[in-house]
Length: 376
Image 1 (cartoon, helix red, strand yellow):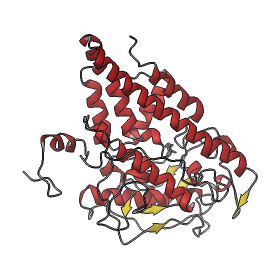
Image 2 (cartoon, rainbow, N blue to C red):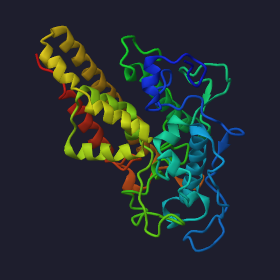
Image 3 (cartoon, rainbow, N blue to C red):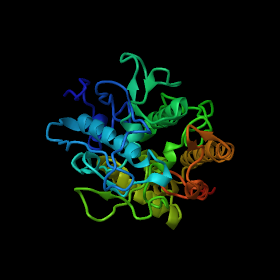
Image 4 (spheres, rainbow, N blue to C red):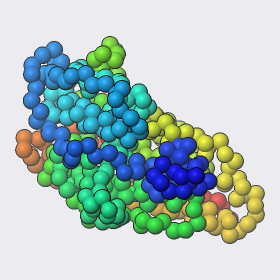
């Protein structure tokens, strides 16, 4: 039997396909559609004054009836999500709008994909990559990779997107619960330029991806033609990546009540088949209980190495956030770049793009991961 890409389908690939997973790419969308070429959403789109607060942008209503397949839906969602971000945040936190107008407001593109009408991790990373040379590889150090669509921020934002892509790619062997070491090593994020979120050389679009728990938009956003009541969504966040949720479920990690509530809310931003994958693991017999009951010291040691590796990864994440967000923020706060204050909105400085209090959250999930170790 042949898989859709021409390869012979194996029992593993058949099982993974139920959850829209790939043996080679994991949760990443394999070979996303690119459209007519690379696009950049400008910060300074023209606005016509109207009833939308800061101004209105008119777009014709776009229909999804001509879209065919998952790849076309992902590309449509990606493009419309970036348009929405540019429309809402082009004037910064002082010029936010109350109502979306025209196509960015419509839910047609979001309903078939099961994704909320906001730029999420699935858009920003999973479906937002292309090979410069179609026959080349997509391995570190990203020389053959580019985002399909980007925001202002140059190499900083490119590094932000593609390093996250490489983390997703490196997790593939773990998703398959394979015995071999990863074919792609975990990337070193440190050589990448300071993240566009707080870089003194670029505006901070990543801080403005959310209008849930965002004081700049306390009343949420009305999606014209969808709902008369304001709606609030969290911005794209690494907490929306299915990878670590799956590893936590597999290893039986139990986070604090507050962290668990946030992480479960982030699952609403995952593609539904990916969310179903996590739930399937959660319903399976407990791996940790199996290890405990086995009485096998080598099995217990192997399990603890997995826990330690996951905790070390989360410690590395904390170090990177400290270096590229907390430290860079302090430097960027003294700079003005192209009319933008070189720092995120004051009320969001201690928060991630998903709305969490970033340092307390990251340290909490790292510590509860360590608590999953099996004592001798």
